[in-house]
Length: 158
Image (cartoon, rainbow, N blue to C red; front, side, top):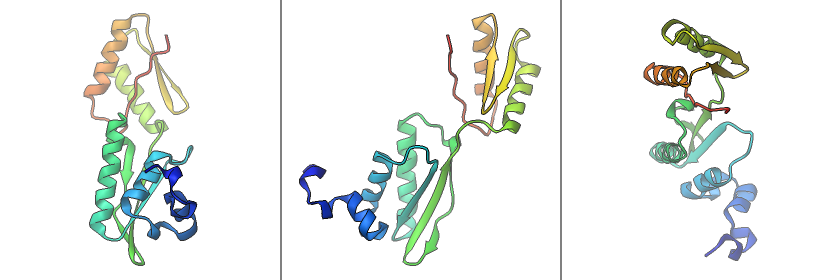
């Protein structure tokens, strides 16, 4: 049965708006959050009736992130906290690189990377340039080997 076939009062999103998160099952809440979410928001909050269900919902969320090729280093989840009759777990998705992490990455490339490589910090990104493609591949291998606390993505602008 499609959502359009349900009466408006029985649709999950409308029940969430009018009755709150306690009116939905955990799976419905998670499906609403993962299916559409909110653009521009980087916080996730899951509410469940028990602590175990809240942890299971976060595990399902992590599996969805893995399927979308998002590193687990980019997601931080708090511990479940009791809020009335429900348990709430909030988490954040980190985007970009902090200036301290960017400085660590550029220092690592300067110290251990190939000689002809130039690095630039551009906002929340680190741009690496070189005349040789082999040098860029060596830098990618170096950063993948290094145990950094940030999730890295490698983008080619050619």
